[in-house]
Length: 219
Image 1 (tube, helix red, strand yellow):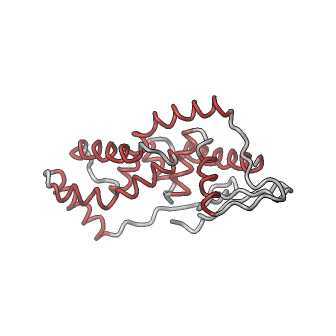
Image 2 (tube, helix red, strand yellow):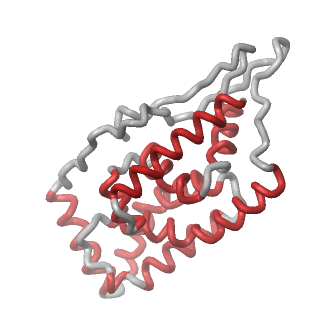
Image 3 (spheres, rainbow, N blue to C red):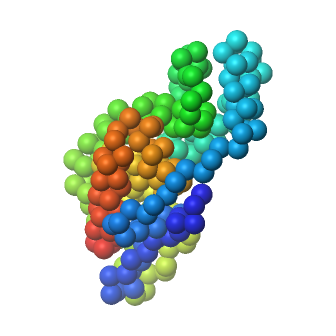
């Protein structure tokens, strides 16, 4: 992941703080970030693996699953938080991927292709949950670290709190923010995954950062 990924914290004058583990709220101006060139040997290995997978070779399909299962699971966690359905969602993502593998031409990396399927698979669920959360909590303010006699949150508690704040972002903003800051993808790669213009992706990232600043300031 790029060096721009760090931590975010905010103080409200009463010793309150909130950390977004592995995330840094950057200035609104988007940094110039170009995708690194794919190692030729890696792309050749992927091409060979895809050829075998398209032929129905179970070992090749298992190789794709083993290599990318953690990527899919981690991305779903960033989008959904702790969820008992994630195991099932992982299986759905790979089932859809393998069902469509004949149509995947390999022009992008397997990881990029799987990010797209993961986003599409979780999209409706994220939107439904966001609507329920917004109605139930009305973007309730988090009480983290307030009060002089309150013990500072542990790293794990702060990470969980950061995840809950991410879940308050509108789904479209959350997707871009997670792909850029947590997954370390470029704006161009995200544009391909979400099938949206780079200008739209950049605008959503800026809005996500602004909204997160407001949520942290209110904490």
